[in-house]
Length: 464
Image 1: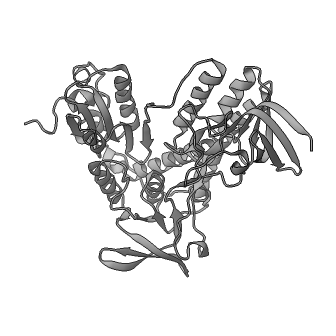
Image 2: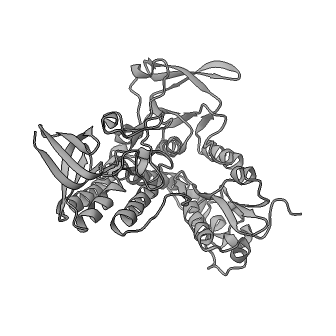
Image 3: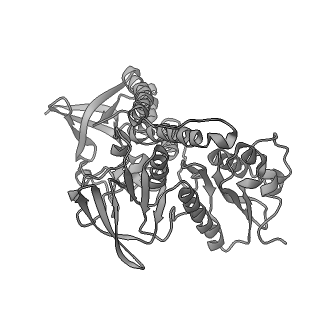
């Protein structure tokens, strides 16, 4: 079989791989992107874009039901799930088409649709979707194949037609009772979303609290918000088995009070993510993976094979679109601009898009205390924020951890309306070395959510 030579091969077309491929092509490198499914990766097709589009629809339904709270008459709310899905599909197609256009219209860049597998350290074979195979080789190969839903080893799980983060968005009707297995960010966004669409929802979490990577007070507030919205939350519950019923599905869970059934019409599995690496033949290339199958990389994103790189979620670590995009910037700087940029120590902001949002940056309180630093904790309920009160959106709180000796901000959690935006403003302050006192004394436009920074840093929890 003839082997086609390129300067660079990108396997997968995610939010890091796509701009990297375009940048390399514009630099004059003959580049090919191999994509087995949808151009645009997880974010555009089954992640950020469709889920946040549906979150917006769910919020409209929520606000419509609250119309009387704002003095607005509303004679009833009915959610058309098919219309919600159609709106989501239209938004996805717009962004997917943009990605496709850039890949196919950039000089020196080609798109090959099929599944890639290594046959050597710098050679791959592509099984084309249209039939046939092609062999490609390049000095530089970039693995950008992403992740998918992890399926837990639970008795009977394969006997039911469970949903995942992709298939749950393709439902044409509202589930009567959705059981959500998992307590992380994906699980909670969908739980609240479908409750607002009109489903009964039960969240079953194995751990002792939801969003267990957050501080305990944040987790408890999230649980309270979901319960206020009518979501049943069951924690410290080990799922022993799953089985079909005439009405849908039954989980048998074990808690401190014994075993008992949780029954519903649909089951959404959202207990984590696993990498798409098993079909890549990485062992034939000598590329090492960790015990979960994630590609091992160094701080410059190079794998255990020189000239082969991991980019985006497939390498593990923080699985966020903005981190994937920064991977692209790291590689572009190092490979095309002659710089030596590292991923080490970069900030990892993120937002959970339940309503209200949880915006996060830097250390949690628990992480800060574990360092042994002398810290101060600033915390304020959203009910104290004028704009939140005026908007009728007072759930949640703002919290920041401050180094008591330097007055620099170590981290923040903003659980409230526009929480992601406020956390981003705190991040900018952290990047610029702006102290908590300077934020406290700043002049911010009134009435905005950012104005709350004046009061947040005015009093700390350990002060009288």
